[in-house]
Length: 263
Length: 329
Image (tube, rainbow over the protein chains, first blue to last red):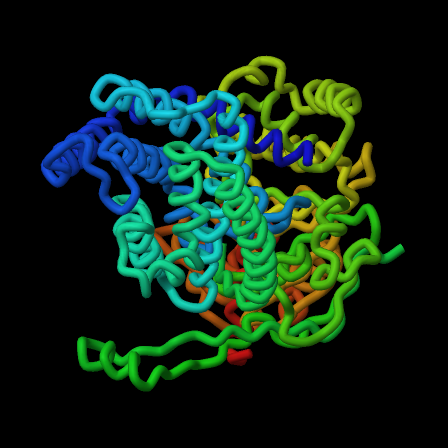
């Protein structure tokens, strides 16, 4: 465990010198939030209106939370580094060390996104408070529970991304699969809560990663209930265990297929 | 004691082949064609503990593939190998604790960290207690003379300083075997000499077995007592450095400056390499022609200056590579 903590720490230190880059990324975030605040304000002709169980404030806070998670946890380590490592054979220099490559990548990724995610959370809260106002019935006692689902959501999302990247062992490029996953999370899990979808789609979406990665933490933030929390945390734990098993299986199979020429 | 044992090791790669042009690309989507390459073809050898072995060959010979199999990165197609009593394909992680690797063309250090932080990082990776890491860094810092730049980020170091740090990082966990893949590539002669000295010292003081691949003949000549030459996946030669030189040292090069032109022709045991004005460069095979006879042919009275030398090791190795090509092994 100590070694992974060290990898995490080393990456975190490195990223401290790139805070300016993170700040530049906020431009995109502000535009998205601006569009959605206006869109929902337009859809909710009356601010007291309730659509599918959501008030306008809840809806905008939902989008704000999922966008924070989306922007704050997006990172090149999972999207490009693993695939590139496999394609170029660079992975060879990582798998001959006494650590698990998957955990190495995960520690590195978490080290890269920690500062970014914290900054996005702070900025997200500030935007929310300034433009929409505080969340109704929000209780600070719930914060540890929400944070726990948020961390697990980020972790599960990372492992799913690693699973997608390991496809590079078999086909040359895993980018199209990342694209499909991106769009699924973005359209079905970021812009609208599950309740907005037709009834027949709801149970399907609840089984997808959307439920544990974005919907879960965002739903708990705007409308906390112990029943929801239990449901989400159980789903997250199942996802976590299954995804770890899948990634371990795929990686052990993939490494045997590795072709590293020259160098 | 044998620290590395390899028996009938094979590695086959399946490589996709594609006909030229767009037509070929489309065809390869529907009907991909593959060809199999024997990157390593039934090789067997062993390495004794504490030995410095040169494992050399031209590009694409199978050197790196062999190293990658020995370090557990690649799985062999068939054959057996044991490194420090461990099967690399089955216990890669366990093996990693007992070996070190340095790839001259690949940075293993984290460039934004200082060498000191890197060593601490590598220490943590190899589960060495903090106190022990400090002592180890202190020892290696002195041996490798890192004092001047141990707290400078790696990205700001010169290539020579970086390679020194790479070697130290690979030694932090006291490995029994060190795999050096072209450690002196791109270095200037002074730094090269320094690195060689350190490698030799490390072998002597710590008893580390060294498995070296290099295209630099100087590395091989100055460090290794034994050499394995590999080409097209097969071992061409596995012999001591002394034997290698001895077998090829029956050829001598004579460079001579004469008062006037001498009519010397190619004949058995003599081949003219260069003739320009009154200068001659001749290769003599002393098993076929005595040196005294050649000098007589040149006419002693006409010689202004003469230099007799052995064939450089570089030429010897090149000719071994070429012979193998001619025999199309």
